[in-house]
Amino acid sequence: MIIVTEITALAHSKGKVKVCFEQAESLILYLSEVRNYGLEEQTAVSDELYETLYHEVVGKRAVKRAMHLLEKMDRTEAQLVRKLSESGYPDELVKEAVAYVKSYHYIDDERYARTFVRLNQERKSIGRMRMDLLARGVAEDIVVRALEEETETEPEALIQKILEKKQFNPQTATHRETAKMYQFLLRKGFRSSEIMHLLKDMDSYVQ
Image (cartoon, rainbow, N blue to C red; front, side):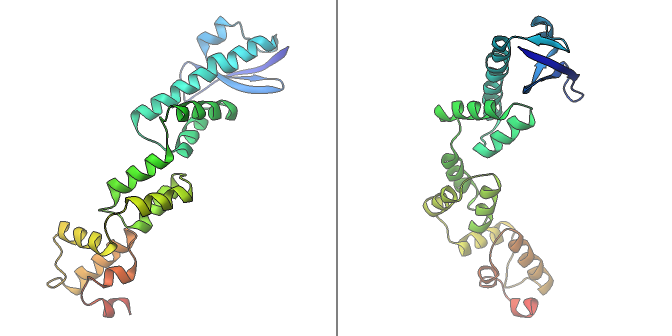
């Protein structure tokens, strides 16, 4: 038998409560479920009932939540884990939910990384895309492979496209305009040497 030690309403989630158990993980349930299963503070529940609540109620809800999150937008495994954990699901159920969606390829970090590179390579440098993917929790070997195999444009060509989109002409730009563009491209993740190759009058700016 397992004792229900505390039932607390969640301020940020109407209709849900946190149910704490003695020597067992806490679960977030709907008030209607608490009533239906007869849960009350300082009362005992059977091991079988706890397992039902854990796997059949909360576990299945974690899978549905994972599916819903992926329907809204593509996510990396790390991002999905973080979102499920923030929703209060126990670590074991988070792992099971992620394993489920991965088994159907609803989540695939390699696919995510390759798509990210294809969609962003014309406006971000390789360095910036690498940092962005790593920040999203994609493994470094996957990031390296995606960048090597999906990047089709050299950095200078990407910079040139940005300059054309911004209608920036290095031949007619003032020193101030050139300096501003230099800083903009640096923030995009391009290296100084790559930028200076295409901008005029940079020697005096960087000194």
